[in-house]
Length: 149
Image 1 (tube, rainbow, N blue to C red):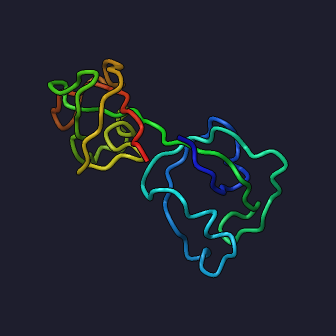
Image 2 (cartoon, rainbow, N blue to C red):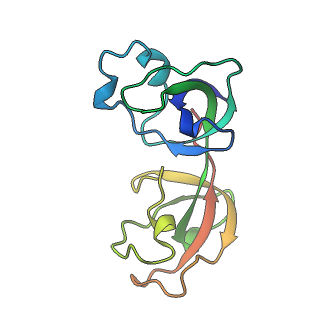
């Protein structure tokens, strides 16, 4: 189900994904806050369409202003324990990883994913991008389903 919201004009492209971070200090007193602060903090979203004839509104947070778009919750890819990597099952992220240079780091600590939540696996993608896990974890790359709003 899509939701109408305002996003920075640079992100106002169908297919663009972002993680909603919630209210910023510049939002205080903004006349558009009721249209802008409509999403769930920490969740990943995908722009599905830009509203026709939507103008650009001034914004204290986005230098180029904001515009009206339709968004929907988006799934994300992540590494999970291989033992729990089955399409249709639920899994949790394995936990933080200090090895930021690892090619799998973005999948071990994915944007829009929380370590204390369970997610439904939509698809098993396969082997993660790394050759060896520095934390000695047996991992599989999966696609999690989007959260229901």
